[in-house]
Amino acid sequence: MSSDRLLITVLIGPELARWKASGRAPVFWWRDDDARRPTPALDRLLALSVRFQAPITLAAVPDGDIAALARACRAIPGAELAIHGFRHENRAPPGWPSGEVNDLDHLADVLSDLDVAIGVFRRAGVTPRLFVPPWNNAHSILKQALGLRGVGLSGYGDLRGEAEPDRLDAHLDVMRWKPEPRFKGAVRFLLRTRRLLAERRVKAMWDEPLGLLTHHLDHDEATWRFLEAFLPVARPIARASLNVRSARRAG
Ligand SMILES: [Zn+2]
Image (cartoon, rainbow, N blue to C red):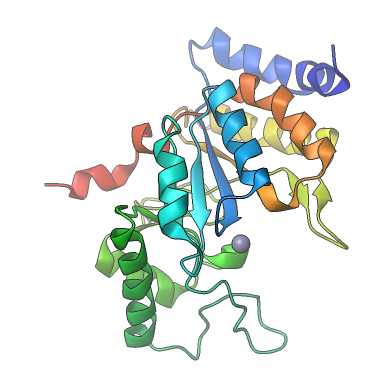
């Protein structure tokens, strides 16, 4: 057994057994950020998705080759594209949290940026359902714009609240980012996973999704190896088959 698999068994095995004893299985979904065009790393990512029958939501930056990414996704069962920002550009004044939208922005300008992004995806034959703000910065003006266009929001780390029915976050980042990107480490990753699983179980939020977050362009070998061990345990399902509350607006 690889050390990753051993750590998975030891660190989250007992928690998964508690779910099973209640007749439940946690609902994982999988988001990957920063795609701009097909690359060898993207091929490797999509191959993992196929191998483990793990549908993936690729958050792609509109200034990339979205048509080529759409073609790549069409070949992969359950793969879909989400919009990852407008230009993936940090516009925050010094000392403010990184992000593309900030307090100085006006809704009309944000809406116009959003419409341009949506248009890029539409021209590639994709109707985008989800917007992933760069740096996971879910600014209130951005949220307003997304609400007006009926596009869901995916940030990082929150339980879905009644107030944000269209929100579907990622929660489990496989990377750590400072001082430079590298694998978070199996123990750190799994302890967080265990904590969030236990939180859902204790609150009886059995259907509350748990989002795995990857960044294929930044993975080191340790990250790729860990994913090979974790994906068959998490068994993520497609975003479209999640119990996303936005369905109630569909009528
Ligand atoms: Zn990004």
